[in-house]
Structures are given as structure tokens and as C-alpha cells.
Length: 131
Figure 1 (cartoon, rainbow, N blue to C red):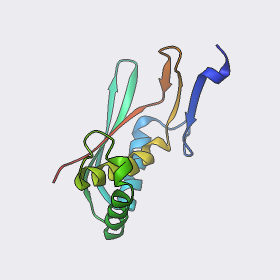
Figure 2: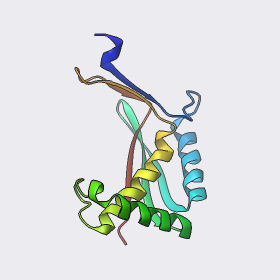
Figure 3: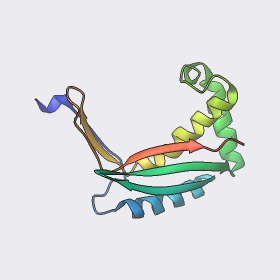
Figure 4: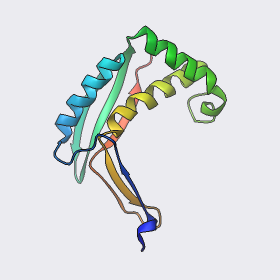
């Protein structure tokens, strides 16, 4: 196996000294500042941990406008993703993608597509509560 077989990702804010609880606090703070009301929970399990983000509401008018514009502008591309066939699905996808980016900024991962090798400091799961 050569180094070119391994895909590496290191978020712009990754810091090996930060634990998952500290990352959750930072992500929660960033989401609030951006205009999301969200729950950020840590889940630990055998051989891993995850950061689960559930968006309860978009509180910022500016963010709502931006998500609406993004959903409308990219609806044709987004609509090919399961669960995004209508405007609400496209809006939800845009919100989830943006919220997840706050967590992935702290993430480090590497994987090899030729084997089942995968390593990350944490996994993420982002969902938006249906209203």
C-alpha cells in the first residue's frame, strides 16, 4: 500500500489536544452564533465516538434567507439526493450540510478505499427536526 491509497482529512480547526466534549462545546457555540438552535450531543461506543447535531430551529432571518437561496439555486443538484425531492427537503439538506461543517472543522480522519481501514477522532451525524 502506498500513501496515495489513503485519503486524509484534517479540519481547519483540528487540535489533537481537544477532546470530544470540548469540541461539542465549541460546535454548540458556533452554531448558536450562526443562527441555529441546535442540540449537540456526544455519544461514545466501543472503538469510537460521535458528535450528534440536531437542528431544532433556524433563528436568524439572514441565515433563513441564505438557506432558502441555496436550496432554490441548487435544487436540481440537491434533488438527486434521497429525501430531498421538494423544497423542504432541499432546505433541510442545505441546513444540515452547513451545520455539519462546524463539526468537520474539528475532525481528523483517514481511510483507504482498497481496504476497510478507517480512522477518525469522531464521526458526525446531523439532522434537522421536522416542523
